[in-house]
Length: 298
Figure 1 (cartoon, helix red, strand yellow):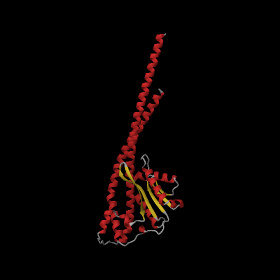
Figure 2 (cartoon, helix red, strand yellow):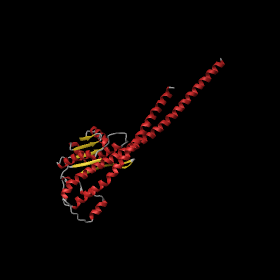
Figure 3 (cartoon, rainbow, N blue to C red):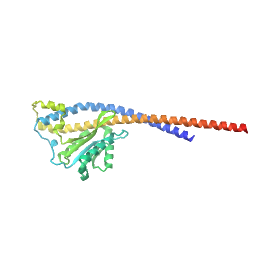
Figure 4 (tube, rainbow, N blue to C red):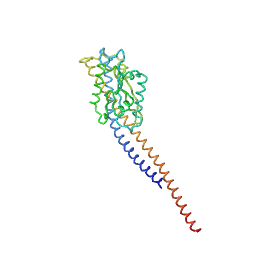
């Protein structure tokens, strides 16, 4: 009977877990819808500001500190966008492994010499890289509790200032790009210095090839001075929105899988419980019959 009691307790525990994972899936689904709306609303603006920046940079002979290409790479910064919470499958680890692979292949000497720093957005990114002895210059835990554009502007403002002051010669942005509820694309891209050829897509390059002479007022230099920092702000904000939607999608999928696994395990345990119960009943009946037969023979 102790065995039956243990199985009953396990079934009850698994059923409670199933209810929790089911509720978490529903919460993630609601957050995903909101995150997708913000992400989709931002995409047209991000694409247009990128197109305008591309046209300005390629169509004028102007220069900007953010276009500076150093003769030698001295210090490198990685801006890593993770998550604040777990229970979202391999959402964080897949991205972090891609970052580590990039560092091993291209920046291992910088890490060894202490010329590679990280800025981590999200608790998971900070915990992962600090544990592996990376130089985490700044961290922003709890950032996704209240996702705010002005906080993203402040972070990018510090990055831009460090680049202009030549504290860093390259800045890379790493995040999860939202593809679907069950699919994310790991992105690790260089955002500073801004490379003119990376601004425009293939279609935009074809449009730009058609020579249209624009007159800029108050002037290309002045416009670029204000536009390029705003472009970088929007680029970081887009990465944060993409990562937030990806996280909710990954959590929704993970909780759905956990709920299904709990259902299967509960069914297996119920089968074992019924088998054990049947075996216990059969044993008791056999003992009763044997006892009655013994008394009759006596």
